[in-house]
Each structure stands twice: as structure tokens, then as C-alpha cells.
Length: 284
Image 1 (cartoon, rainbow, N blue to C red):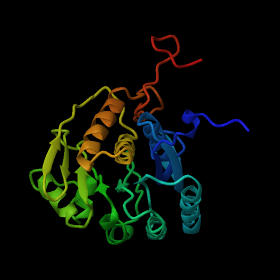
Image 2 (cartoon, rainbow, N blue to C red; image 1 turned 45 degrees about the horizontal axis):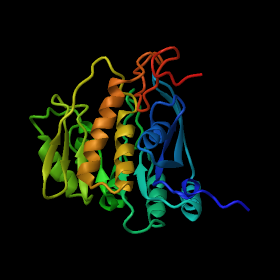
Image 3 (cartoon, rainbow, N blue to C red; image 1 turned 90 degrees about the horizontal axis):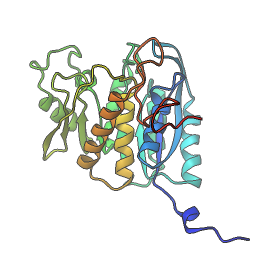
């Protein structure tokens, strides 16, 4: 038998997305796998829900049974191993329970990033109201970084999601969510006037600046951000270093977003797709 080459033997970091599927390819595990590829890690998935979705909206959601979610995680652990985890759409208490059980299977120091997906960009409810308490009680205290956007941060603290930022300063939100138990919090800036992300780990509060791209496309930007953050943790970055890289990568993906795909908000482009015939063509 031919000896395998050193290159063939090399194992990249392997990162698991536990999230819902987006049939339109813009968000969910589809966005996660693209972000993993952009960060040069091997991506794996445990699907929590199947959505009938496009750029206009979500028309149907089918939850995956809890035992099947756990079985997906166990399968990749037994053969491949998991160096970091990104958690996305959960939807129900039963799914949250299954994911909490899945985390019990991991090595204790495995980095976990939780993107608390509550509402899709089109406005569809993706987390049952009764599941918010389970999310806080069973998951948030176990993760390395939680990455809510501004409305999600307010909802996690039972505040008015539509409140003005002056009524509920983002630094207070970050401290309040950190008190729920995660090692670090990143409140993403897409819904803020200043656009900057806010990082807090109990000792340092850091604003990570960003630029707004009104002509870009942002569908899947939150998934891309949290997946890139998990990938960088798998490479050994600190949470703050990973948050800085994730901010830049997600921002660039919005800037390069595919605004011409679909009738609604187009998907981000984290891989730099060039149309055939352009410089740097990657098509056939």
C-alpha cells in the first residue's frame, strides 16, 4: 500500500455547525459552511430544522427530532472530532434540550459560539417565545461567545426589542448578557447607528468598528459572523481576536453581497464569487 503523503495526513481544524437549513442558500448551515471554507477549516453540520426559505421569506419550518440532532453530533465526534462549535437556529425547547445534551458529548474545553437566532431577516419567528427561558437556562451559560444583534440582546434581557439605543445603552446590554453566564459577549452592530460591534468578557469592553455598505447585501451576515468567529477560535485565536476577524470577514461579505440574487435582500458573499468573464473568474 502506498504511504500517504504528509499533505494528505494533515488535518485542518474541524468546526461543527448546529443550525437550521436555508433552502435559499443565504443563511443557516449553507452560510456557515461557506464561512468555514473562507476560514480554511473543515465544516460539519448537525441540522436542527429544515426551512422552506428564499430571499423574500420563510414559508415553512420542519424541526428535526432531538434524537436525530444528537445522533448527527455523535457521528462526527466518533470519526472526525470537533474543534469548535457554532450554534444557530434552535426554534423549540425540545431542540434546545437536544443541543444541550449534544454539548455534553464534547471535550470540556471545546469553544462554542451561540448565535441566538430569534427572527429571520424577513420577520419570521424562528424561536418560540417559550424557548427563550430554556435558551438562557440550558445554553448561554455554557458557551464561549454569544453573538446577539441589538434586538436579540434586548429580547434576551426581557427588554423592548424596539427600544431606542439611548434608552438601553449597548454596554449595559453586554454586561447584562454576560451576567447570564457566557465567557464573552459580542453584540453585533448591524442594527446600530454606529455599526460597531461591542465585545465584553467581564474585564474589557471593546468597540470593534465597522463600515456600512448600503449597496451591499446582508442576508446571512449574522450566520457568517458567528461561524467565522467559531472558526478562528478553532485556529487558536482569543475570543477578542476572533471577534475582530469575524467582524471584518462579515463586513466584507456584505460589501460583496449578491444583491442580484432573488427578489428580496440578497445573500452575503464570503467567498468572493466573480461572474464568468470577469477578472479572477472562478466559473467554468
